[in-house]
Length: 347
Image (cartoon, rainbow, N blue to C red; front, side):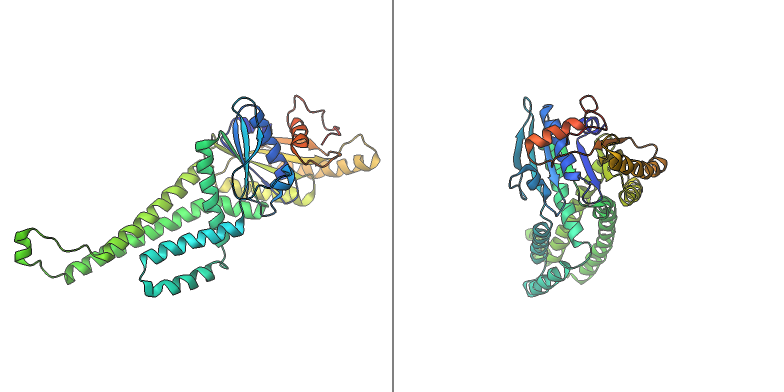
């Protein structure tokens, strides 16, 4: 189910409560797609940086080769560093503001950026900008982009941000247009009539710096709006993008999954699968059998709340999934044709 979802999409998000195995599943799905001949980029937006630990190599905030696939297939990975991303975002904003403002106000820009670093939403806006860049690049250079996201609450806010920020930018543009018209009218009234001799000679007055600044501000806002609108179009196109919610068969992850599904649906994001990871076997002793019965009660709540979303169960394994070989074995569990079933002991 999860593998077929990845095969039919260009962008696949995996999200859910922390500690349920999102990074492992994202890596396994990406590896399987690469081995089928696709060029794949796996992106981690989780500040825990588990992607590098899982692959047993240093990845960081740069596109890093992880594995070769079949034919022209390949797998690359990148970990978004939220703090570094926020710092770079604020530096870029400060550079733009200083270019548009008198030098006497540059100190005020620095103070404002320092306050913004601690303001609500700054971190999410910076990560959104970086995620937008990677999705744009990924769709140009790769066949599939798999995103391993931060825990549910952060992810839900992030997925809703493109619509919110597009509306906010449209509001800024509207106010900017009104201000520009008023400013132009005022400057027109204040501007003296051109000298007759200058008119005869055909010379023109130098361009008003305020008009140039206003035009540049408008161009920046338009680029930002168009980019966010493009991201929203990608996120809300079910033929391009889907979201798989990963969870454990426990009370809190189930409740969080139902809430996350509601928020994603409200944001227009297609939820293509529920993946229940680390499912207890029923045939490995009384303790695990009782544990599985408890899990079944929680999953009954999930099925009642979200009957229309396909659900796949992954068995609890005996070993840690670390390194390419273990990931390859784990990927086999995602394929119903090769998995040993719910009692499998492989991990």
